[in-house]
Image 1 (cartoon, rainbow, N blue to C red):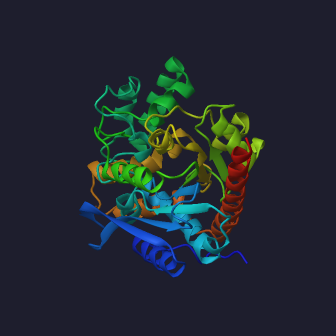
Image 2: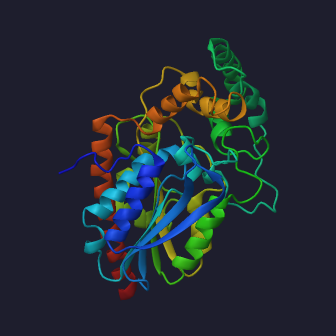
Length: 378
C-alpha cells in the first residue's frame, strides 16, 4: 500500500517523527542544534542524522532532505517512509545508509527556501577565501526582482524590463544569471553567502567523520519545485561519461539522466551552478572514495502563465525577508503560496512522491551492491 501518511504538517512534526522512527528501527542518531535561531513557536531547530547498518560498511547511501528548507516536506516523507517500511532491516551486506534530515532546519521550519542568512545552500559550498565566481548580469536584473510591493505594477515592470534584457543578452543568459548563484547582493536571489553557512559546515563535518571508512558513496539530495505531480527529475552533476555519471545511469537509467530529457522536464536549458552540495561532498571524500549520485527533484508546482509568475515565489520569499517581514499581514498568505509550490497537499502528488522514492531507494541500494562487487572483482 502507498499512502500519504509519511507527510507531516510542520517541521516540528516531521523532525519528531523522523527521530522516533529512526530510534525504533535501531538507527544511531545524532542531533546538531542550530546555535542562534529557533522556529516559529520558539522550538529548537536541528539537523538530525540517522545511521543504519554496520559502521564499517564499505558502501554507504547518503541521503539528504530540506537543503532548500520548505522543499523538505517531500524529502522528509520519503525518508520516513523508507524507515517505517522496513528499509533498515533489508539492507544488503556491507552496506549502510546515512539519512540527514533537514539540512536547512531554519528554512524548513519557517517555510522559506534559504537559510536564516538568505543563503542558498546549493550555492554556498566553496572556498570563500578565494574570489567568488562572477555573475555580472545579475546586478542588472536584481532591481527588477526586489520591488517594495509585489503588485501588478511591479510584475509589469519585471516583464517589460526583462524582455529588454532578454533581447540584448538572450533568454538563457538571463535565466542563468538569476539562478546560477551570486555573491554580491545578500538581499537577492540565490545568494551564495560570504562564508560557509552553519548547515554547510555541519554537513561537511558529518561527511568527513561518518563516511571516512566508505569506499563507495551514493548520494541522493531530495528537492522539489519544477512543474509536475511528484514525478522525478534527476540532476546529476558528474561530468558526462565520467565514472560517477555512468554509475548513476546504471542505477536510474540512461533516459533519466539524458540531458535533452532532463531539459524537457525542467522546462529550459539547465543553468550553470556554483557551490553545490554535490561537488562539496565529492571533494570532501576524494580521493579515496568513489562517489556518484544526483539532486533528485520531485516535480510539484502548477504551470505558470509567464516569466513573472515563475519568479513570483522567490519574490515572495525575498519580500518577506527584506520588505514586509514574517509578521506582516500578508505573511500567512504568502507563506502558504510558497508552500503550495514546493509541497502541495494534493493526494496525487504525495502518493507519487512515496512511490517514486521507494523505487529510487531500491534501485540505488541494489546498484551500490553491484558497484561494490564489480570493483572487488577488478
